[in-house]
Image (cartoon, rainbow, N blue to C red):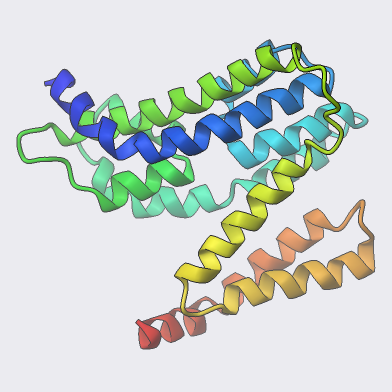
Length: 232
């Protein structure tokens, strides 16, 4: 039963393998050139498993100790997982112990697969979701660990490698822009960032920006949803 579920889950995770291998490798190298051994990206990938948060965590570790700022930053960056969890409540019913790991490993890519793909009729649904989560988690840990090990062998100039984080967010934004017909939320994000950048400066605008975005999305949730329904 478990082997059949693993075989059914694996093909759906192949695109994630390609993406996580590259991003994980870049993250591991970034950690290494920032002064951390391969154990840091490996353990952070196992325990945190939040790609964007792990990239940001590098700067957090190199900055002065500020637990409240780190807590707020982490909460705001990962807030979207609250909505993932709410939408997955019905799918997680009856999965017993498996649901706890699925909840822990619920990244964007895993959510998109297990929410949109139904397990084959002859495959246990719970184990299918479990192995999709496990495989994606493994890909990220593997890429990060290899990057951390390879980073120490790189002799070329690695200045600017941290730009991979910026590039990743830009690509995610562009993909969402292309997929969505209603760009209201994206425009809100861009305007919020621009205004907060002008008010708070480049070193302190991120937290206010994310707080403003969440507030605006909460205020205009119903109009945005009505527009999306009309456009669909």
